[in-house]
Amino acid sequence: MSSNASQAGLLSGADPPRHVAIIMDGNGRWAKKRLLNRVKGHEKGAETVRTIVRAAGELGIKVLTLYAFSTENWQRPAGEIKALMALLKKFLIKEEPDLLKNNIRLGTIGQLARLPDDARATIEQVKTTTAKNDGLLLNLALSYGGRTEIVEMVQAIAAKTAAGALTPEHIDEKTVTDHLYTSGLPDPDLMIRTSGEMRISNFLLWQLAYSELYITPTLWPDFTSEEFIGIIREYQQRERRFGKVDPA
Ligand code: FPP
Image (cartoon, rainbow, N blue to C red):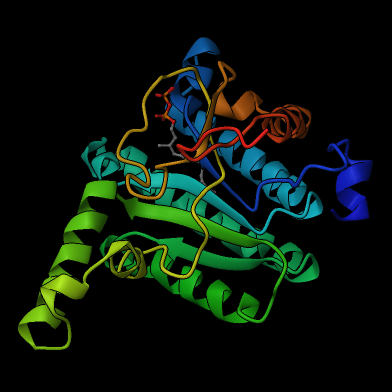
């Protein structure tokens, strides 16, 4: 474990999670409670993103996947979608120097082609400038849906099979894993959802098979690095058996 991680209050002797995935929920309710427009909730939520990205880097987490925009979110009012896309672009432009300074690489999963051109161009640019960083991977799920990801995986495998590059009997779990958006990444060790909803909402359907889950009632804009560290400590005390029995 890095000295930063122990300084931050993680337990020594237990590994921190390599990959943490978060469903950042509750921006709308945070705004509503304050009689504000929903977009104000997303703006405050973007500040939380900044805090948690920094904390994850300091804790030595290797991958942080954030559910920033789902395939279902395209059904929200046009004004809210426009504001979210503008916020994403503004966030990346503002954070780029810190990502570089803190050795953080930007990645994405999802149907990036559906994003507006300007947001996509900013994403591609920040991906390029941070490509050589080997600290935390900030992996944004954008226009992401777990079922769509599975459909695209099946299409890719079917195309290779039809072309004779794969035979059905050689298709195994690794073949599937290698054709998902997350190819090359470890599965999430821990999935956190804010705002208390007990659902996974089409997020990483294959990859969450053995992840530890943590649901907090805190709304995403109120989520702090202290609560994040507390959840990671709780994770460090869990026993992961992956369907097997305790060896002791
Ligand atoms: C869920 O809250 C949140 C979203 C759909 C968007 C998440 C976006 C951000 C955290 C800010 C921008 C992101 C980045 C990466 C800069 P909700 O609107 O569903 O809340 P509700 O369930 O209370 O209505």
